[in-house]
Length: 186
Length: 292
Image (tube, rainbow over all chains, first blue to last red; front, side):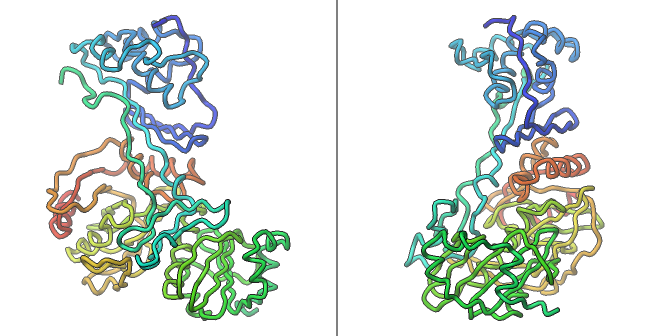
């Protein structure tokens, strides 16, 4: 891992809202919403394209009043890059270094008392449901008629349920890209 | 001026171009269709025109308009729906593209009602529309976002039976200050265990409740869905987690993301957000009211 790399936060097409201890980012280009916990948000905030990984670790450590290893920043960058929240020029994916997230968490150490960076993401289900029919549908004896696209421009994502109702296709679940237990040592 | 517009007048209002009419051979084939009922309305800033063939009277059509709709006497409109009704098959077009086709004419009204409501909720820029059950208890507003078949109306009805004031079983409508307005409609309940999507409408008085009037800020957000024999074990979510959960059910978040996110931020900062599976609605309703 090259700690002299200088990550740059993406700005274009993002709606950013500050919340207590979190940052909410809506990516209008990809119809995705992201919730950055405090530490992920801190790393992202310092991705100015001029500050390298090692320097970000020091700055974040100072702000949190704790020791922050470079791997901690890599863990955040890996998630931020995956969600297209940093520019793609430099590669911050842990996969390309053949290192797993679990391995990085080990390296950060169990003694750490600060929350691991977590980016929780949601693909806006409304993007899949645009044009969805949500009405009682045809009897089961004539399956598939409900919402069947008959023109190429129709994008009805509905299915006929066993209850004879046009229902949206499965709503995506919210995914957390960080560790499940977000606070080491607790 | 008569609100019942002629087809020609309405088509002029909605700006239908002849080439659009010719796009689909199927629509072209139906050029001889006689529109007997026409109507244009505005709801939360979205202007919609409707043309229907025989089988749907104007008063029946008016009854299908979403709450807070006002009939328009002049155009233009943003969207239009065409409904071709026959005993063998009915077809609903949205802006000249086929949206729904179903045998017979049994579901015509429900189909159109659903589409009009959905269209307004997705395109309005005046309010944030969250698919949710909404009640108030001691001036504290409870928001229960959820998809269809998650048991929203059942839980809303139980909350009303337990003394809560009814706001909506369908949409929470929020202004830019995150105040929630009532969406006055009857509660639409499916028969327990019924194997169809058919719903029966009940006035809130049926459950011994009253309709809320005043806009209120959200005090409690409850993320829940029915699961047989599930125990009520609420977990408190962070504001950020809360926004993601609510955003899943925010109909105009796709077209108005900035507005939606700003309003939801205000909601989660002021409200407590809890999440739990629930078993029977009666028990869950009691537990929810205790959270207030």
